[in-house]
Image (cartoon, rainbow, N blue to C red; front, side, top):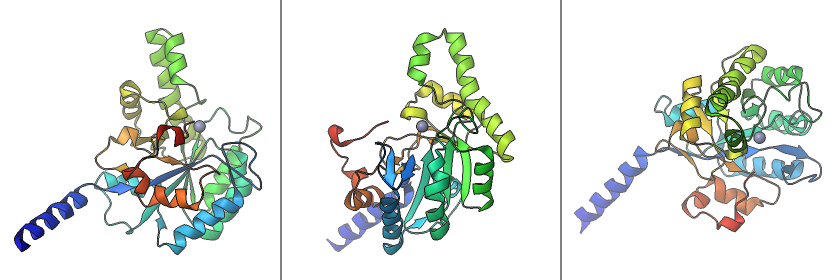
Length: 262
Ligand SMILES: [Zn+2]
């Protein structure tokens, strides 16, 4: 019996050791009030950061997490979590950054170059560069102009679509590298849309990894071109937030009705 238990324990332990898993969070906008479904209240975000700290979590850079999943970086803190923000909204600069600086946590910003220093809601190149000087923020790619690949695929011929995808993936990478002055290694799929062809194109364009919003832990057992994230919005209370980072939601996903996809 004892021998059986020991065998069972070793089996579980080796299975655990084999698969590396890390929760990656995805935010969009911040503000004193909830202006829309994509905005999280500053106070709620502050509460989440305090909760992470109080519960022994360490926010690690996306690059460290991805390299760990690939077996390049070990060890990492026992309770790691990654924070990412999509779209480059100006409230990242005005509302999120003060909290990031207070807690000294690394944050990855997925932005699309067509909006930067252009769209009213977006940050400027100067603001992005200023955030990077803190060494807490890192800018990565969210395609060139945030298209819906499903719509474009229907509209365009096969050859046109291929060119379009190249512009959105390789073109965005090149533009961001020029503007930010550093290598761009990561991509966040827009609207969470991706397929085998897009994943192949992302790898071809030189991205180390691409991220979805499929609500699960990123894992060494998953493809690097479709590593999942949890989108966090204001209606997630601390209990729901804890379920994301502690892996409960990954093991027991909520019903389809409960899942928010954008
Ligand atoms: Zn987006």
